[in-house]
Structure formats: structure tokens, C-alpha cells
Length: 105
Image (cartoon, rainbow, N blue to C red; front, side, top):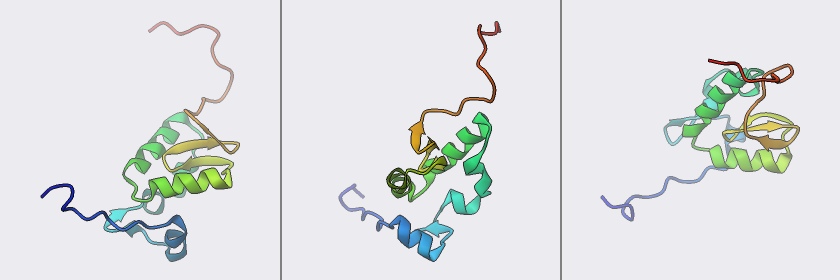
């Protein structure tokens, strides 16, 4: 079967998903519905990276990210990206001040 023969799965808007409160779309689980929601608002950098990795297989990842950008979500992981004060940031910094010098391994 070629790529042209395969039908694209129907797109599901984030609003439809929210309205129906589905746990999956087209048989694919939606991680934020299947896992503890607190994971997506975690404090530790490791937990934030875990939440971002869960979004990797989400069927509504793009719609989620678009919606979060439009709403300027104040914080949390949305569409596989970390938001802090309404802006996407690359990674979460650990608490406290950064070290002055790097630790020798």
C-alpha cells in the first residue's frame, strides 16, 4: 500500500475533544486524559521532560499547542512544549540559583 492509498485519519479539533471528554481519538490514547494531570504541571525538570515525552504520540498534539499559544497558557506542558508565563521555553530550570562553576564529574 502506498502513501497515496492510505486515508489520512480525520482531524479532531481540540474543542471537540474537550466537549466530548474522550480518552482516545481513533484508537490512540490521549496522554493528558490517561495520566495524572499533575504530571503536565510538574515542578521538577525531570517530570516536565517526562510530560513532554508523553505528548509525542498524542493525536491532538498540534491542536493542543495551537490552542495553548492562542490562550497564552500561563504554565504547564501543552502540545509537547513547556509554557512559563505564557511563553514557550526550552526546558525547566531547577529551583535555586545556578552554580557558579561546573561540577567536575
